[in-house]
Image (cartoon, rainbow, N blue to C red; front, side):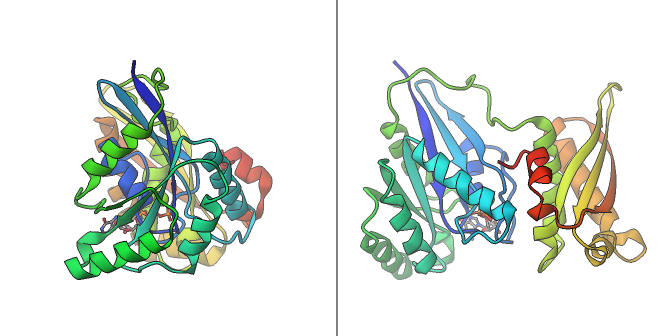
Length: 293
Ligand SMILES: Nc1nc2c(ncn2[C@@H]2O[C@H](COP(=O)(O)OP(=O)(O)OP(=O)(O)O)[C@@H](O)[C@H]2O)c(=O)[nH]1
Ligand SMILES: [Mg+2]
């Protein structure tokens, strides 16, 4: 009999949840950035071995809801946690345990699921510093097991994965073994473009950016034509995204095209344009259409 089940990731924004999901799945299913609140949708990353299937539910970082977008993200986190076989609570070793982490720990006492703690970014610390943060993590008194890891270089990740796989109930697989994510291709491609926009923008702009695929044409054998729209909330953000003489949008486009070509294994012709959608983050209908639920 095989084992299979769902492990939901909880943690403050920017602690490295998506990086960890990608590391375990073995390819990029979730985009990553140095800006908080990168992940907006719950994404399932699937890691299958001969006898087990670990489905990791990457979730938005837990935070105080500010608008309809972050409120939805928060509700989704609570729903997913309650429905999982285990919760993987990720801490940022570099920052230590803070009030936000304590708040999450309290929330995790609610649902009846085992909690595993991963202390991430240990590559940034020396041994005594790691020992100190592991003690702080233990003092939260929430987890059955604590693993020091580096999602970036893979340190400690295999031991964590073995432990998680051992927690899964006996069950047939939920996904075909070769599947790595539940995300529709158009969403993944739009996200890869958003990742490049996030890398190059600051302050409010990354939070205001959303990317929507308008055309995906693979009729030609040697070339995929993709047209995408970058949303911004104000004219000034639009100006930043386009840049002087269109320099910024060209830079984003070139970098995004390379990512799309890597993902699709084919040449890509990418056309990007920027449009102002005032207040989309507060617009429930827009969020529905974006599939953020
Ligand atoms: N040094 C170091 N950096 C890491 C590690 N894991 C993630 N990071 C960096 O931390 C930043 C945030 O990573 P993400 O994976 O996007 O974090 P997240 O928890 O998914 O963030 P949200 O989606 O906003 O909740 C990125 O710049 C990553 O490259 C790690 O093990 N070591
Ligand atoms: Mg994320």
